[in-house]
Image 1: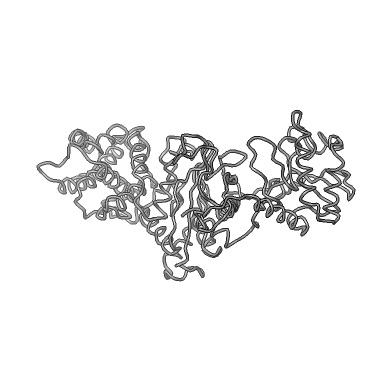
Image 2: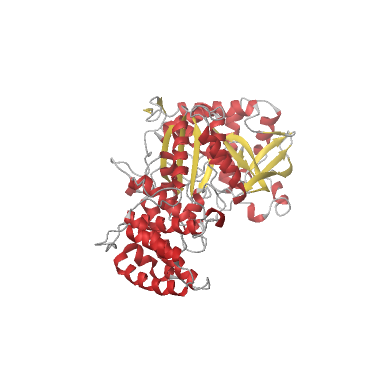
Length: 577
């Protein structure tokens, strides 16, 4: 399913023809029509990139559409029109001459029927042999440490020898066709269902965090991964050359496009639409920004409210029935792991996103300026202090994003991680409370206590106990004149949340001493009495609370605390005392 979708993506765009590839090139070899080296030209360009939420200028290698290079693991494998110093100048102590001769043979064979300034210059360059002319540019134009990694392309009379040159294009296409015809084996491709030449080794995919040379999505790299009698020397699957080329090209294009690629911790999410429609992509990007700054909160809120209030079938010209694809990938030692692949209509994904934002909607704590919480902030709350994305459990990011976009229950590991952070003594802020509220709605079908703000009518026992704990803590704080370094929250909260019966009798006794220190404790005593009246007189405090009830306890505590912090003009005269 993944490969079929990527092949369809390639057919919708066809950014690179079959047998060719976009390649970043370091330098150009400026040669004359008689094959003499006139100079070496750096090909780096200054471009603007979004880095860390800021637009920065960086130097980047220039991209050309060039023949797809061979997969090099061992042996001599020459490349057409673009290669490294060992194949172009023989700069390899052990096999430099052999590499140069192999490359010479390839170019003379591919260009033998072409007579033009570019083809003649390249043939003359190789016919001259290893001259050593290139060495004068080492250290001046090309740093010595870059020689082994640098790639070179030919330039003749200001024209590059790449896909744009019709003779180079025809020469490579003709050479590739002959090479393919010489392969007798034909298979029924599992992706296209057409007869094709099998591809044993698929192209490399440049994924952030993966190997610098690129990683494989499909491969056999050890006998332990083989099955059905196949070995590591066999092809991984019956996939033809066309499908192998198409899916690798499409995926690399998506990974290179900042508007169709987002980072989730160590994972990378790519997404696209059928028929390469950009309007849905732009709309998706407008409010599914993985790492907005707090200054973007107002913009994010405006967009979300706009989407929530307009009709389902008309969002900025989008077709809600258009298929939308999401693929989350993770780097591995040699291959790429698929975190998830999800496809639905654009309308379904928008609807799932809106439901997620509604689930997470909760009264603010005046600390986070985000009205709608970006998921990177949520994931960071699962880590220890300081909050850093690199500490997030590797699998959690992909699982959480999938649950948002597919509308499935949130990962239990997210909920458990938040509970662990709270039990360890961390503050119960808006983000943690929002996660608990959302999980209770989605995973436990809770509706009574999962309101945006305080529900004073409910008699749900865990929720009421959470409220009661907040009242007892506030009473202690007021009795001490606000000068406490630590409250009952620091000492008793974890036990009260999990085992209420072991803690609340003690807390109620302490509250009597705290109330005695206040000149006016009527408000707190009245509220405490109202909450106790909502509890079962015979067994008001359960021995234990399950995970869902612990969430309700925490939510009750958070709602009550925020109710205390509302502005005085919104309170009654008694409540403001």
